[in-house]
Amino acid sequence: MGVTKSSEVIVELSNKLRYESETGTANSVVGVQVWGSRPLIISASHATPHVRLGRVKSAESKTGAIALLLGQILGGVSIIPLLPQNDDPNFDLIENGLYKATLASLLNEDSVLIDIHGMKDGSGVDLCIGTGGLKPTPENLMPICNSLVSSFGLVGMTANIDDPFDASHPGTIAAFGWSRCQTSIQLELSVSSRIPPRLGLTFDALVAALSD
View 1: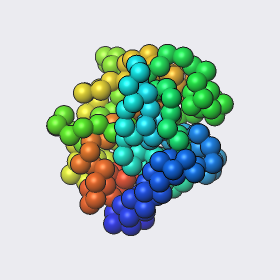
View 2: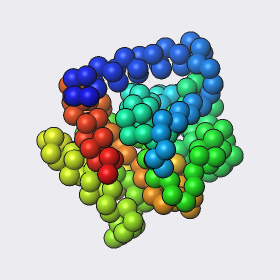
View 3: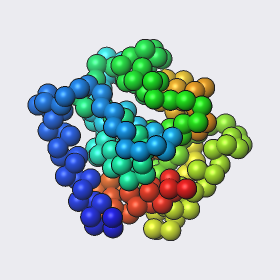
View 4: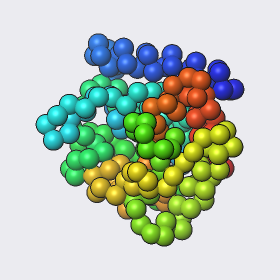
């Protein structure tokens, strides 16, 4: 698609999703799009405002659009919230909330689950890959982790594994997937990596890493 084009598409789609969320015109609370037959599930559980411990937290900008476009290009499945949520699917331990219940219906033992998030700048990296914090990193997660680190490096961006976020909280979407599928990780993207023109580089690096 190209760096500039992918960046433009993500920004346009993100604006559309934000408008539908803010005006309540989305056609469902959680959206699922099956793009192809690959067992790849791209999630963005904080793509809309959500409530953690009684406090409303803002949507993580552009994560929903990235998840949708990634799923489409890679021929997998995309799942994102489309309207503001009254819980936090990446924190709450309750597993029968709408987002996790919908996700559970998509998972099987062959699934590869990627949950995309946004983090603040200041951590020193563009991408943090959360694997649960186990040392050494579980062997089944090393291929995808190495591919992500390499792909980001090739476009001049940086990636860490489990630093600063390791997704070890039992309420995370990544943790939800560990007992249900082959591979489950959390990806945290810095603010600057989600702003054009670096947004296009970020997206292309994700596509390259997850294409294998």
